[in-house]
Length: 254
Image 1 (cartoon, rainbow, N blue to C red):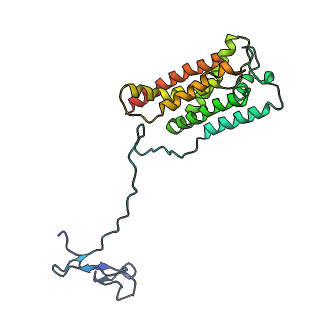
Image 2 (image 1 turned 135 degrees about the vertical axis):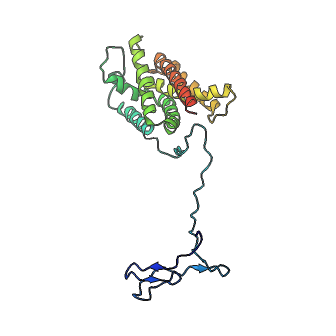
Image 3 (image 1 turned 90 degrees about the vertical axis):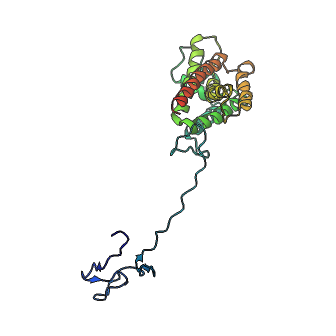
């Protein structure tokens, strides 16, 4: 019958049947339990002590684009973005030992290694600051939301790819830096929020601040030697395509 206490318990050491209301076996002295169970005076039933419930960790509400059980850490370390910034700083320092023309792209027939190295070398501090500020901010946000592979892919496609497109056009200008990566990452990050804003959907991006940084990067080719307009706006178009793909992917997973 449910709720009826056991008539006896068996000692694990000597096998004797003893009362369920004692703590030690009277035959061998083995301790059966830490304390005797409480007895209900009205019914005489033994009621075991309820198990202690551990407090459940409190979780904050899910933000947009987050999957239950997989929470993005807003203070996480964006390793891919940091690596790109460090390589760019080393590239700028290397200009103290090599000439710009020796590492920059001039045309499509340039050495293959220059297609990579030129993306990490900037002609002056202000040009580098504008590009790396955009790559650092929006690469970091993209990496936290979508992972490091996307950031590296955008840098290669928009930055190095944009430089390759400019070299193929061959306008005779030296190509340095990765303004296409900067503008491409801005576009990939901002386009989903822009479309959501037009649809009246809540978004978490600062579109005004993003627009200011984008304008600064976009005018670099007009005021800086080595910043290619073709590379910059080729990266922008590739970034817009990536942003549209990200928006479509996010919408289909909701």
